[in-house]
View 1: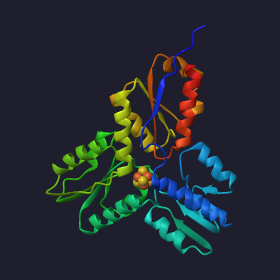
View 2: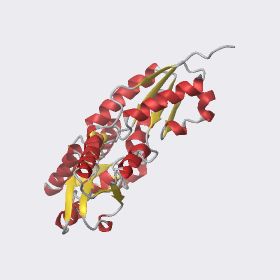
View 3: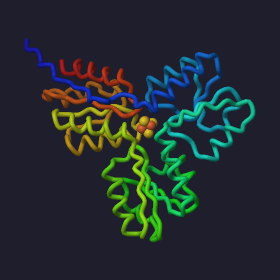
View 4: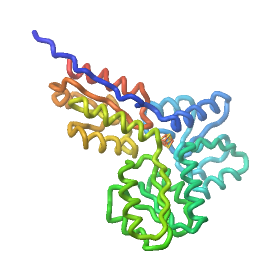
Length: 290
Ligand code: SF4
């Protein structure tokens, strides 16, 4: 009987939760441990294991602030639109814990400053992403949002005197550069604020480095997590043998053939993917290739 050689499975450096997500989770847990009746506004994280853990602790999630009648409301790292923030802050009997990430707060501030200075704010990101919904609420009436993956939406950028460019924190930096160059041809005065999160950048750099060194990449994270999808696109650009799975359970027996015969396999994850999930995927790969 022959035994299959165990692949060399490496996890990218700097993978695991980003500090913004970690802080939001810690704040919610701490409030609950203090005996508060805690509800988060939207999911703190796109991760089934963490969602289950929070639910077990008695931390609820509401999609809309109107559904929360009292207790403690945690605003997640993505932030919320200004009108919603003002509303919950003024609501009677509701304590608000603002866990908006400092990087997102900086984007909101930049949007407001640009709008107040007369710039048409142009945001590159995903229109339906909560972070973008929040940032655009500070960007004045003239702002536009364009999609990084759909260039036809870039035509929304007006020909005008002053344009201010911002991006969703998880957009690939080369997309921001490309978009800024596009806007330069439509205005006289261009201001670009680099709002790509450094955590995302480092993670991407480390993942790309790993993708170059291995025969296959497994990107782990929620299927609706924007930064995980971006990471998968980036890795696939380097290593075509890249798959995106939500968790170890998705890496079922069907993938065994794909994994076998790949001596070096890399793993990375989005900002909402905890280290434990990456370790679980590593163990699953060992089982499937044994
Ligand atoms: S990815 Fe960056 S901007 Fe987004 S929550 Fe994490 S640290 Fe903050």
